[in-house]
Every structure is written in C-alpha cells, then in structure tokens.
Length: 600
Image (cartoon, rainbow, N blue to C red; front, side, top):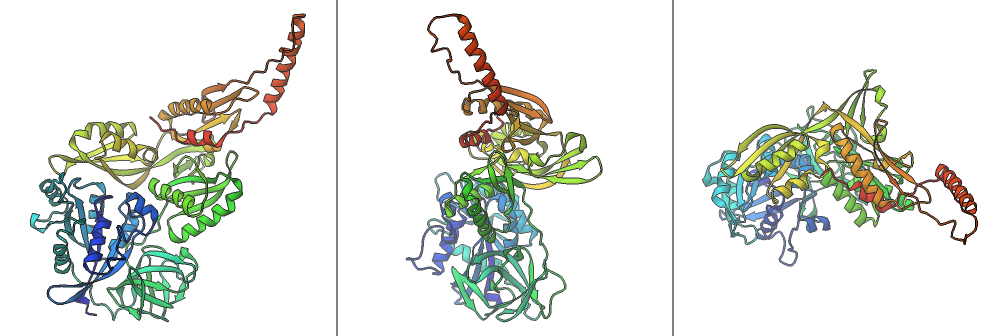
C-alpha cells in the first residue's frame, strides 16, 4: 500500500466531551462495522468503561475510507484515555501518531485535560485538528469555545470544525481534514528496524502481545526481535493489524500500526514507550520518550475473608498482566490480617483496580487509607522512601521529611475563583498564576502537596464550582515539610490500619475526628476501652468507650450493706484483671467508616 494513503491519528479530549461517540461515528461512516455489530462506545470493551462513560485502556483500530477523489485511504485510529491518571498512556499513544483530533464540548468549553492533552500533542509535533463537538445542544456556546481554542492552540477560527458526533453532523469535514491536514508517515523501510510499544494485552494461549507503531524498517513473522529496555530476545510467530479484532498479515512496514505475537510469557518485559528492534541488525538509538511508570498513590488491599488471600494474589497477578502500571507487595496488618500494599497512578486508577478485582474475581476487599510516597532524610545522611506510616523511623533518627508536590492546573468559570483559591490555601497550596482563556473562563495554577489532593480535594472542587471546575496535575518535586505520624491506639495497642502521615497543623483535628468516630463505632466491652490519637509518641486526643455494667447486687434483697460492698469489690478486681488481658476486636464496618473520614 502507498504510504501517502495512510494516516495515523488519535482523538484527545477531556472526560465526557464525546471522544468514544466520535470514534463510533468514524467506524460507522467507514463501514468498518455493520449496523448489526454497531453499539455505543464500541472501543470501550470493559463494562466499567461503559458504565462510567470513560476510556480506561487505549484501543487501536484500522479503518478503510473511500474518499471522493476515488482513492482508498487507510486510517489507524488510536483511541486514548481521558483521565489525568493515564497521562503517560496518552503520551505514548500520541507518539505513535502524526496527527490528533482535539475534541472540545460546545457546552463546557476547554477544560484541564483538554489543555494538558493539547500540550502533549504539541510536544510530540503532531498536527492538531480542533473540533467543537455537540454544537446542536441548546446550551452550546460555540463562539466562546472557538475563542478558547484559538487562545489554546493558536489556530485560525476557520480551521475549527463544528460537529455533532451523536447526529453525524460535520463528520465528512472531519474526514477531509484528516486527509488534507495530517501528513502521511515517512517512508523508512530501508532503515534499521525500530518500533514503539504504546500498549499491550495478554492472551492465555499466545502470551503478552505488544501493540506497536513501526517507525523504521519492516517487522515480519519468524524474525528475532530485541527489547531495548532489558535486552530480552524473542522470535515473532505472528504480526497483524487491528480491524476491531486482530487480523493477521504478512508484515508491518514503516508507518504501520499493529500487534506482535512472540510467545512472551512475562508481561514485565513489555513496557509502554520501549523500542523493539531486530536482533540480527539492531538499531543503535532507541525511540525517544521511554520512562518507567512510577506509582504515586499507595494503599493496602485486604480480603474481608482471610481465606481469600491466595485468590487475591492470583487476581492481582492476572490484572498486572493487563495493567503494567500496577505494583503490589505482600503486607501484614494486625487489624486486617494478610493483604497487599499496592501502588497506583492516582485515585481513579485505585478505584478502577479495586472495582475490577471485586467484579471480575468475586472478592470482598477492604482498602486502607491511601498514602503517597515520602522521602525521609536520616541524621546519618541516608535517604529512605516510605509509603506506609508503619515504615516511618523513630523521631530521633529523622533529619527531614520530604513530601511530593504537584503542579496543579484548575480551569473554572471566573465567579468560582475566590472559593477555589480558598480551598487551595486550606490544602497548603502555593499560588502561582491566573490566566484567562476567555472573558468567562480562568486557568489557575497552584503548587499543591499530593497528599492533600488524594483525599477529597476533587470532590470539594466539583462541589463548590457546581461541577464546572476541572483539575489536571503532574508531579513536580519532593520538598521538605513538617509531617508527623498520627497513630491510633486502641486499649494501648497501635492500630496500623488507621495510622496516617499528615501535616502537624492538621494532626490534632484529624486525631480528634478519628477518636470521636471510633467511639461511636466500637461496641462496648466488659471493661473500659481507651481510644487515643498519638503524634510522634505524644497523646493529643483521647476518648473512652464506657464499660458494660452488670448489676451483681441484683440477688441481694435487703440485708447488711457489707454484702453488697463485698460483691462490688470482687467485680472491681475482676474488671481490673479483664482490662489487663482483654483484647478489643475492631469490627470491619468500624474500620471502613473510620477510613472514610475526610479532613473537613
């Protein structure tokens, strides 16, 4: 096939701006799917994606389009996730393309992830085709949104396409723009082989299957290939393209998007952004942009029923084959038993993994308070990284604690700026700048501690802006901060599942809230139970669950008072002995409710 008839492009947008619906219309118009096969969100294969209306995994697909100039074009569409947690996956998908359709909702305008993805596309030197979607909505602000897009990408108003992915209006203009504006891939079949891995999947029979974009050379069946990141060598047993399903072909040439089967059993060998080359004649320089994905949020996952521990381990291993960014290590908790410490890209990623484990593997799970990773500088000059409060060394050994800071970008209508800035200040944010994308829409930049964002920041932001504000953030650096370990003691014993690392200004408030909540939830025992909050070994809050009283003198009808006193004294000694050896069982619902305490 001629290279000038090939186009590789992606669709980028904020969540809920109509990305999956536009992909559906493109598939329908090119007759890639028959009307019987057609359904909403075709490329969103998981039930979870359909329910939430978000794309979690990127999905490539090849379409054939007959243009009015009688030429038959091949389009490779690489669909991308829209949430901030999956930014790295979006960047690798964009690196596999020459162009991107920038989709903006006519009713909502440019939002945080729109800006972030547009910058990613510009960094990858892609041709951007701006499209305003949902122009047929009564609440559409087409002219205002045009101004926001011009401000964002610096294009002319005439270049912006007005469309409605739902009704199909403007779809032909989009096809013409893809052909006329996006350049075909360069012919590099003679060069040494280089292919970029932008995603992967796992098949029980064929092993791990990398999704690749070939930049240089040719990849064909029987060829030995090498991975640049770790040097492992495999022999290819099958190559092919994506036409909704995998369709085998003879070879993949420069410019092609497809998949490789090479009986790869270790999913860890396939890393997004890595370069595949020929083992016989390897390239010297890998394709740029590869970096190892680092988890940012850590949480413990424990089965409600301890007997399900092995089942949880097998389930996590299977999920890791499909999601290389998930990390987990075995962990033991006195309160919760055996479980795993898991690393996630963000809160949505954590929520998705937990829901998939519960749905796909029928598990009942408890998730502990999410934590971020901290760096601790010790007095002896060494640096350690901790992601759970129990790993925090003694106060006397610590020189400094560093917490991760992120650069946050919030887009919102101008009337909510005051409330948003108040929220950011409460969360220890450092104000940077405010820009106006239009007379009505502001872009606010803050530096915020990641530990403050992972609790309820996003919910509060949406609440105070009536749902109009959007957030995007990226890791910036570790900075020193006045952090302390807040421990909850139950009857003198530390409950590791309820411990957390927090800022000293917030510790007292959080400790009191946790003690009060637990007092309501812990059932009364035969002895008094002290619930305490301890900050670096010093008690800062305390409450007591009163003992159950048994009337031991009920059998005494009249008689000498000394009989009653003797019985009360005997009961007092019994309660004292019980208090010394008694253990407090914390019910699961008490743990769950306590873990959901925000920092209002």
